[in-house]
Length: 136
Image (tube, rainbow, N blue to C red; front, top):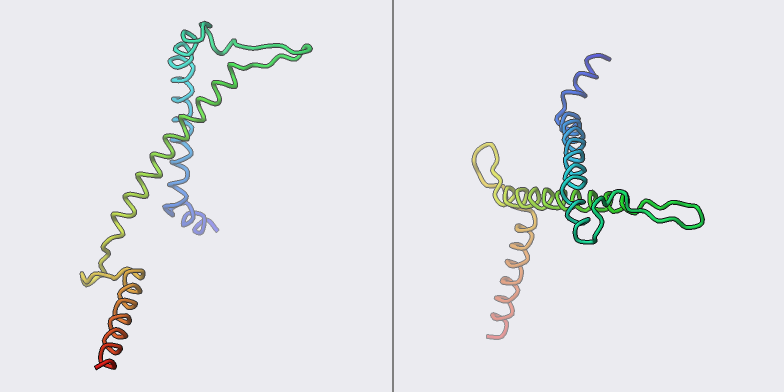
């Protein structure tokens, strides 16, 4: 059982996931600090309130903390934008890496879609030649 656990932990996906969670938590702290200490004062200057996090209103005795909501929305948008950029970069790297794959002998492995399209092209050429020969 200990050996199975060691194999499970040593797999790249588990380690990658753990690193991702740790980096994500650190990134969340950084984004929260940027929002609280940099963006909030700038927004506060624009709308006339110095401390955005204290922005609130009351209705029938219930207090609504608008500043905290705005902070959460800003944090969410920043994090989602960075995730979007990372996914876009990973897709580009994957697409560039998948253009030419080689086997152990160094021979290029054909892309299944490309191979299928080439077969369709060859079949159309064959049909076109047969139609041309029938006419003459």
